[in-house]
Image (cartoon, rainbow, N blue to C red; front, side, top):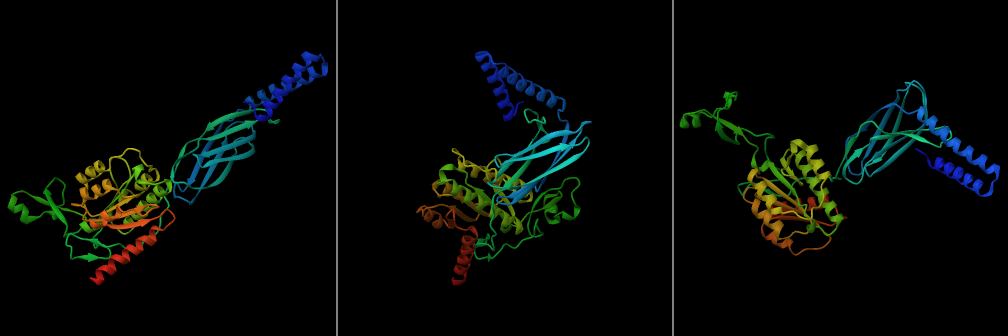
Length: 392
C-alpha cells in the first residue's frame, strides 16, 4: 500500500500528465511519467522484500492495579534470507495507546528487541496486539506488511486502599465480640457437619457416636467457622450511582475490602456480576471480575441476593453501593438470616436520608465521596464501633 508520501507522489504524477494534456508541454509529460514510474518501482521493490518474521511478546506483569506500570517487550526475528529495510513496528494496547518503532534494518536470521512501558489506567481487560510490522521501500513511497504475532491480555485491577483492622463483627452469640475473627484457615475440629462415608474417605474422620446411632459410618465434614466467612456484594445497578466517579469509587471500595479480607484469612466470596460468586482462593479471577465491572441499566438485585442465599454460607455481608435505596435494604433483609452482620459502603456525593433505614436495621454504614478515602472511613468505623462496645 502507498504511504502518505507515496500518495502525494502519485497525485503529483497524475496532475503533471493532466497538465501535459492541457498545455502540451513535453516537460510535464516527462515529469509525470517519472513520478508514476518511481511509485511503480517502489511498489515492486516493496513486494520483493515482503516480511517473514517471528514475533514473541513478553508482558510483565500480566495483571496490575490501576495506576501501576507494565512493560511490554517485543522480540522480532527476520526469517528471510535477505535483510529487511525500512522496518516499522507498531503494537497497540486496547484503548491505552499504540507504540511505534522505526526499527530500520533487520539482517537475515537476526533478532531485534523493542520495549515500551504502559501506565495502566483506567481499570479493565485489554487486548495487547497483534503487532503490525511494515516494510517500506528506500524512497518511503510504499509499505507492505500487516498484523503478525500473538494477541495477549493485560488485566488492570481497580486501585485499592490499605485497610487496617475490622469494624465490629458479631458472631452467633451477640455477647461475643472480637477485633478480628478467630478461626482456622480451612476448618477445625470444633466446626463440622456430618455426611455418609464414601469410598476413599479418611477413617480418622469417622464420627463414631453418630455412626453407632445411625448404624452406618458418618464422616466429619470440616467447615470454616461462621465468623471467618464473608461476602462482598458490589451493586451494579446504574440507577444507584449519581455519576461515573461514584461508581468507580464503589468498585475500588469493593476491591479494597475483598483484598483485605483475603489477606486476613477470611473465606471470602465476591459478587460483581455473572451468575455466581468468586471465592478468595481464586483471587485473580475475583479481581478480574472487578476490573471488568460496568454499571447495568437493568439489574434485579433482589433476584441476585435470592440466588446467593440458596448457596451462601453465611458470615459477614459487605454491601458496596452508591445511594442506598429500598431495594438494597431488601437485599440486606433477604440475606440477614445467614449473614448476621452487614456493613454498607456507600459512595455518594450527597447526604442521603435513606441511610437511616439501614442504621435502624442494625447495618454499620460507611459513606465517602469520590475524593474521600475508604481507608479513613474504615478506620473511623472500626474505632467508633469499638469505642461503643467499651462504653457499653
